[in-house]
Length: 343
Image (cartoon, rainbow, N blue to C red; front, side, top):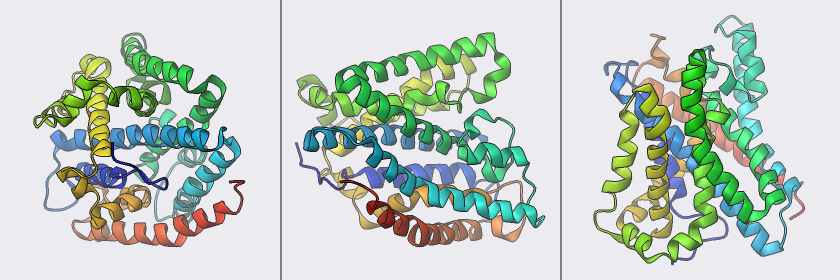
């Protein structure tokens, strides 16, 4: 098995790049000469779900590595890393729109700011476009709060059963809610109890990875020349929009396809596709993906006909502002955060 750098996991930045491109492909139609394409909306879902599975896999892998290296896990250091990694760019974005709202340049309900600032937007269904995408960041933050504690308290073995339980429970909960509380249907693809199976599957993959890689039939599947037909076929089921089928089956199948693709890419970074994912441009876009996800929202607004929301100007502006956010806020704050960690 190829060795991985302790500083990063090969191909994950490239996969993040693909994820953010999928989100952009879902948001761009309707902002210029490209008409609105409802059939492409599933690409945004696939992109966000890929971010979720990557997060579960990456965070769990880092926790396992820390325990193996030091014999323990420092929750203090974990949360310091997350705070300095996530909060500065996030609250800068909110701060900018507070100023714009006070100046009367945008209209955003005060409740949107409250839910966004509290990382609870995934429980707030009716919201303005400018802060609407923060539902997925709320899901991630809730995961960061919960999972390390579960991992430390339960240990790796029992935590793996906890994660598997989440993967099984979420589709059951979605379908049951759809039947019993149909008025909550708008939250079934956003509220944490309904979507934590994407992240939990990434956690499960990291925890059972050694056993999977020791299983000859599974290794044969990953190495098969027709392998990509499997994850692509599973991911394409996300196009099915019949509510019960989507909530109970295809969402789980899509997550599984994403997890299989991630495992193949991480396991074989020297493969043809792995080398593509490791190309500098894709790695750079992947490292920029958090800020780009934050700042694409106001520029890729198909409901706003002004020049800065029109293709291709809007994509260029989103990229430029994301670069400013990354280099002026994210990177300096990451360096600052290292001073507060014990290891």
